Length: 228
Length: 228
DNA sequence: ATGCCCGTTTGACCAAAATCAATTTCTGCG
DNA sequence: CGCAGAAATTGATTTTGGTCAAACGGGCAT
Image (tube, rainbow over all chains, first blue to last red):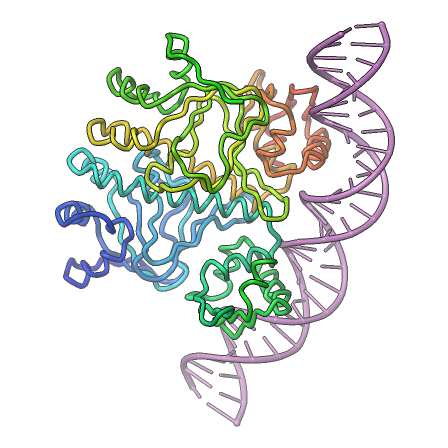
């Protein structure tokens, strides 16, 4: 069930996690904040479904949200897993009408939602808000294009290796590690894999020096992993 | 080899094919035109490669351009096939630096290229140019998300059926047809399939009433095709 | 300590598409 | 009209990942 939280300084601190604020000055951020509310949702809550009229775009403050498409026969595909700081559905500021995909919380989640009509109106007086949205759209577009390219070009072990290499922290001359901030089934969804396939990919990568313990992943030699 | 064409009223007519102009008024369009040049390129010419410093974004006026990613071992993936009216690389206005993918002409092609730095400067005086770019980015993002979802959720025959249904012109009560504006191997690239797989998908769809003759595709019953 | 539930792993089987090769068809040019 | 080259199709095989089922492990409640 979705619940509204009252505006407060805690809310303001939460809102500052939204990436979209990151290059706005005080008055710009205040104007955008005025179009937003902070809300909480429970794990597995549906935020919106494909085809519903689009009133808001969103930013994840805590937790995870998956964006997905259904087909008419019970199948579905994940399109994107949104993490804290990430926004989604802001493309509807310009491409209006209805939501083109569904959104579901995958955890107890706190989000900001921004009223699309109000934000659209703001852009005339605060063009740098438009710039922030343009940057956000650009980053999402590049990330989605990269995801499509990786799906089309790489095997499951290569996709997992690529993910590890992009997210790990180097420690020694060749070692690195990563702690997943979410369960492995969310990583599987992010990479467009079934959980079984992710598991098998990790198993395959053992011979390339990757060790998995729960959500902790350690890499013995990043150069070996780059050659996968 | 890329060649510059001199500004002329023919060039202006060509430029008006760029979708990005479509909702701009006279002075806005003129300002954007001033940042652009029209160029031609031959089939298979590389427009830019991944990693090169990004100076321009582009709009296809005639012909077709593919956007692609290479991996280090000779494999490549098509990310998008751009058709007349389509723009690409405008995400670099905000997400600067270098090109994130390569672009290649797939036909004798005429394009407009827009100087990124000059367009960025224009946005302060002409915020509706920013709005046009935001709209363009939004459409590209939605299209790429849809493509990713279709790749993940649908078989090859379903992807082809979906393409036909989205592009055909209804004729009778249940019949429809389509003439592909490009060779079938470009359709295969667009759908993320090998040409052999596209051929087999068309063959499978024969039993659903789809007839192919060169680039012409006829559908006996769109409702059957919708059920694929 | 035990039981339950959820997440993960493993095994087996199957389907889909890639890949490789060969053949056929189509298009454009001389 | 014939030919060459490219595009498309067809056949066979391999690879990859999905699906289904079962088992295991970890965390939480009793």
